[in-house]
Structure formats: structure tokens, C-alpha cells
Image (cartoon, rainbow, N blue to C red):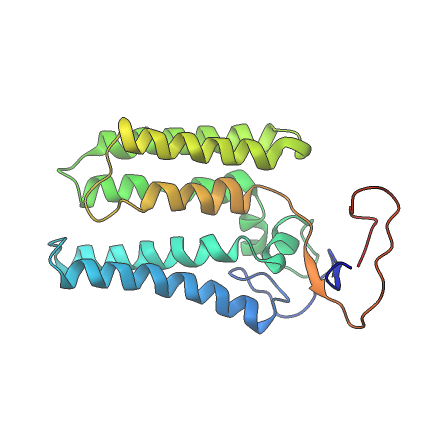
Length: 218
């Protein structure tokens, strides 16, 4: 017997660009947990002397970690899938319109450029190459048919990890940046997946075919 959940694309409530409007408290908590995990890693790197950054660099690094760590987890939330992959509501703000624009939202992720300039030896080449690869990946996933969009995104992430390992070494202290950035956006934000809600009442699963899909609700 399957788990009692239901697919639901509708939402309402106070606009939430981070966790998605209508997110459950536990979903929001998961997003903040991602922030905490990555910020904790940076604190560990600083305390152990693995990195030697000034206060400005520390502040920017924490902001990047907060965005990547929290965004990576939040983009996989059912509330975010529901929010980002549905048309803009008449009651939603211009900021919602911006973040629901997949290409525009992705283009704001200039993290590799920032890290290359502030933490490497003014290594703009590092940042430009990764930003170009990142935006190229965004275009590829965006034009990929839905039924293979998810595996294509995972393939791109695999290639990005291999490139970092053997072709474009990471900047010290930011070994996590490229893999997590690609996971956050290329898979988490761009791939449409069915958003589940907790079922109000337990009920048997009804299948119309061999595989549970959008019309097969549990």
C-alpha cells in the first residue's frame, strides 16, 4: 500500500519566495537546515585555519553559503515545486514574476564570478568559465522535453563534478560551490516534479494505469 499523500498544484497564503507559498512549517525548517549546515562548514574551515579570509570575505562567504545551502534544499520542497512551476497569480508581486522566470532567476546566480574575483588571485577566468557552463546548462535543461528533463539535469551535474575534479580545480574553501550550485538550480529549480501534500484523510490509492501519475492520486 502506498503512502497517503496527494498531488496538489494549488496554493494560497502569504507570498513566500524562499520556501514557496503555502509551505508546511517542517518544509521551511528543512530549508533553514540547509543554510545552517553550509554556514557551519564555513565556521569550521575558519576555526581550523583552512581558509584565511578578511571580514568582508567572511561576510560574503556566509551570504553565499546561506543562499546555496538553503536554496538547494528549498528548491526540492513540494511547496517550491508548486510555486515555481505554476503560472503567476494575479495577486502575486513583481518579485514573484521575476523568480518564476526560470532563465532570469538562474542568471542571478553569479556566485562563481564573485568567488573567482574575491577569493582567488583575481581569477576572473575561473568565474567566467563556470558561469558560462552554468548558463549553458540552464538553456539545455530548459529546452529539454519534460520526460527526460530530470535525467538530463543529473547528467549535467555529473559532468560539472568531473570538470571540477579534473579540469577546473575549485578555489580553496569553495570546493562545495559548483556541485551544490548545479544541484540547486539545474536540478532543483528547473526540473518540474509533482508537488505532494499530506492527505487530509487516509484513503486507498486509485490507479488508472500501471504507473502512478498526475491522475493517480493517493
